[in-house]
Amino acid sequence: MSAPEFNTPADAEDAFYRAFEQADLEALMATWADADDIVCIHPGSDRLVGPADVRESWRRIFGGGAKLTFRRTEGIVLDRPDVRVHSVMEEISVAGAARMTARVCVTNVFVRTAAGWRMWMHHGSNPGGDLASESVDTPAPTLH
Image (cartoon, rainbow, N blue to C red; front, side, top):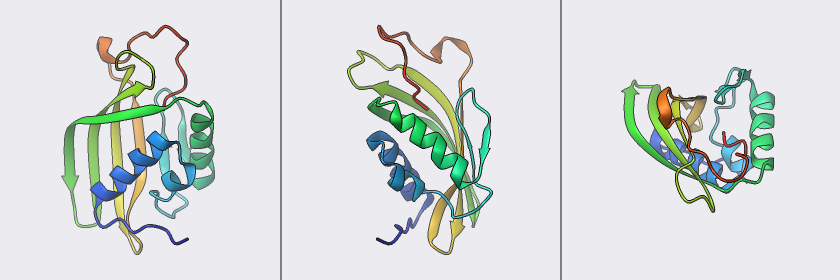
């Protein structure tokens, strides 16, 4: 099976979040650039560099079994010919929870490659204030 071609950064970002919601590691990794210097920073975590470390982090997150849904809001875009930066707020819900369980400040950086647009960096961090997360009745799974 050949890797998908994403014609726009929005196509790559939509595919990333679709794969995230479906906990589909292969589809998620197909959104990333084929480069040794890709970067992923999960909220409260260290910087991960390179495909092996990025893949392993997502494998662990998906192994937690939480079924997540995302709503992206407050988008800000920097648009250049071969690089696009999206700064968004993720509102994350866990299946079965009565309300949103977390908000994450996210920066997604996309680069134009020979195979179309691909993610080069995903950086999530916890926002300040009381919007970072709401308590749920069960221990919180690793969401991101």
